[in-house]
Length: 302
Length: 302
Image (cartoon, rainbow over all chains, first blue to last red; front, side):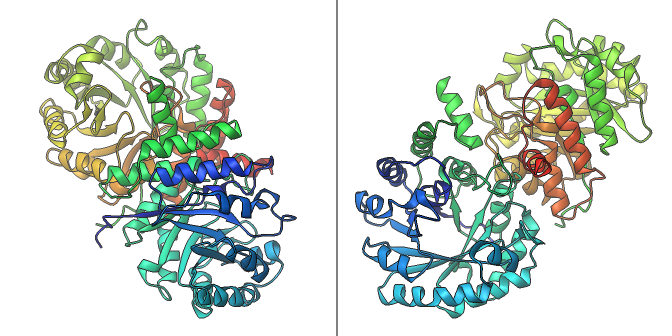
């Protein structure tokens, strides 16, 4: 297998990264972050979600954010839509892609959305149908594909089962997510292999967390399988709700540093990306949770 | 190439990790750290150096530390010896292995030890000869094998040149070090390939820094070449003198987490290793610079 020569990154920072922030982040700051990400060359940005503000108050400004972005051609603006009501609100704001989700762990599904995996997918079926009818792309986020905070290791068969359900309802692309960051190279390869039973390599992305420092090794291991699409989060936004103080989403800066060092094109300007991460980190009053950003900012400071 | 089923780690924390600490670390604490590392299953520990205390005051207690360790059979206690005077002091403390060093970057050699690469190796020749005569193993640390803080990228040919000089003077084993952490998977593979011109795969170890977050990906990339020996530093001890506040040596905990997750044996007890890292980090008044340790300690705290 030849390692891909070009990689596409989806920056999930504005949505996945910010959604658990306790203090409200103003819509203008979120818009400023999206603008900096698109200026840095990101071509796919997960902007917000259309979830009840009772569950996720940080995303209550979804309409304001989506309508405030000065959109550029060629960029995919994605939003999370957990149900038909969310989709109907989202569609008014013209997203290019919607994200639906499911868990490979039965325990996680029950604890988080209070229903079985199969039931959760059934609920998404009309959302996917409506999106496809409206000509909007659909991405399926598959969580807990390696490990689960409630049931431990998750078998590849469970990943294949979930991927099969996603395929059945018409989801075009799936992300293999290691939600709690416990994956190591062989384990994430097995999760991707299981997904390959239902999706081609071009319809699979990797979504790795750096909780145990494994995200770049896992990215490399799946790159070696031909995976060329990954979700990352600028400045490593988004902690780990299952290990207080630990790291969550892998930082976009660290992934870009690796890819560029390997001669792989991303279309991203790393300096501008570091600026985008510094912008949101300054607002949040903390340092970027990215080793590459930390080192590059230290070099700038001289 | 099959990935090795067993890996040997050399914990360089007590020497490489602590040497730049500004405040003196008492010998008793260093000994306590070595004891905890050997209890955790480390079989090779870089304990101290025999350098002039004018240059490295933190290692002035080398004799006290070496003679205070309750040694266990089967463990290799290594020390750094920069010259014959250092070696003669070291030999009285019965190290199992000495470490000599050289840079693949001419500029780094000139700036750091004020002589050319070839001159530095000539100076080590009598040290290596004396060690071999005394039946002490010799390891050669090759610094800046990917990049240099003064001259930028370092060509693989320069690594091959240094490895050839090391071989000529009788050094039995060399470490391929990415001293400033700028390496990415293909670049470190090329540095190892260059070293293979003079050394077999069993006589090469990897020494990666996590300054840009790349160390585990680099470890994986060289594991895939058959490298099975790596230098790591408990709790990520040892910052990066070339980027203030940035990470230096890769944390032993993060590497062990990856290896065990891949089913690779190390003989190390990760929980005890985390204890060793917490012990020295508590003394230094900071948190372990290891994502795996941070997540595991957060889980313990519940």
